[in-house]
Length: 245
Ligand code: IPE
Ligand code: IPE
Ligand code: MG
Image (cartoon, rainbow, N blue to C red):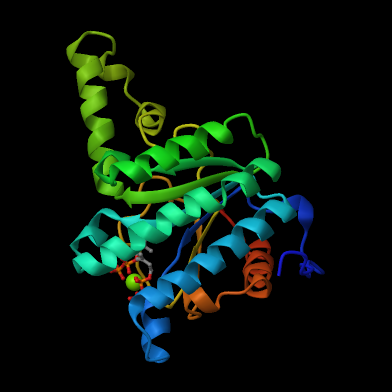
């Protein structure tokens, strides 16, 4: 699987998005279709994560942000949440060396303090191990919710005003963006959602103001590199007007 060629014919390598965000959805439906436990779908989904990370790095994407667990996902059955945490920890540990070797810089966005302590520790270790890498930035959105991210930003800005560091009139869009988890990244040019749902599910609400959206019916465990390349080609044919003519 590792050395599988990527068929990039027809893809303009000079016009790739710098930041791709992905709502990785459909693991449960994939498992259900196969009469398997939902957790099997998440396990298979983790293989797709590895593939997408590899392909994006190889074609030269600078930022890849993957929605792995939302603030709302805590409300799932305890057993599923625990299984997801086990898989997450496995991923963060098992991919550490691979990321070091492949010059990937690892980061997590979201309420990391809500995660089990052992996972917080492994996240820190992987972040530290990859901190000097300057190839692709891989962001995992974990216990991430865009509304809570915006609330966090508002609180921090209000505190700066309260202490006199910031004037109300000086607050602009850059001020808000600077207080989001994504402050050091460009906004995503492309958002991909698998498994057909036409919704954003509390992901990067501020950051996707002018992002191109691609929804595919393919369930995340079935998502392939060829489909990723097809979506990228489709993206390159879009006319991004940003409100102008
Ligand atoms: C996405 O797959 C993974 C997570 C949200 C953690 P789902 O688990 O949401 O799969 P479906 O939507 O039930 O098929
Ligand atoms: C969005 O998927 C969250 C992740 C992919 C982590 P969900 O399956 O949780 O979203 P809804 O419930 O379909 O909106
Ligand atoms: Mg889902």
